[in-house]
Length: 263
Image 1 (cartoon, one colour):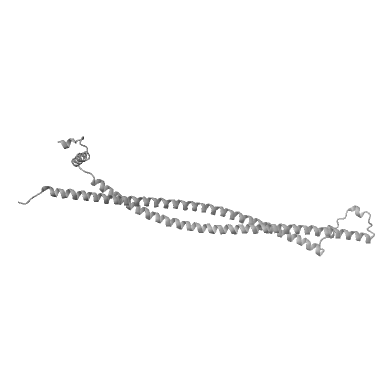
Image 2 (cartoon, one colour):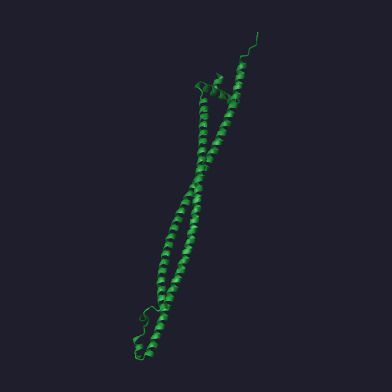
């Protein structure tokens, strides 16, 4: 007669399923921990990328504001240059007119009557019949008035030359500022192009990372949902587990005997 121990199989099943449960729980915990750490990293990475995009966005805004300021300055510079050019043109016209009068005086083509400005009382004592004294006086008046006319024209030419020098210097300074502003504009435009390239690159990086994050979330969700469904047990099994868990916990307490154990 063969010895048969009906409890031996149950004993093996009991031990085996406990070991599998412990192993599965350990593996599940490892997977959950891995998913949690990776998802936490992906969240930090996403927030970091979004922060970079916000920073670049602010740089782009500042870059545009600086470009608009430079454009307004350049427009003002050009207006001032045009005004100076017009003033220089007017000075040139006035200078040409003065030089023409100067040439007339040098060539003696100016009317003598316009230069002879002797007071009447200076002529009272002169006898026109005395041609010699009269001519000498007229010569003196003519030369004095001619000299005064040259001095007045010299003064006007000097003033024009001084004003032209000031306007020319001012135009040169404005041209330097305009050239510097245009250089700054080119630099800002290059920066703007680089910022746009950075934005495109980072947005692609963010999109790729978000796709991976969604994939991980969906897979983790599937795993958790599956585990939650697996953990659902019947009322009968829940009652048995609760009854004997209570018994196991109170095993070391002789004063507390579960009712189910007494039965």
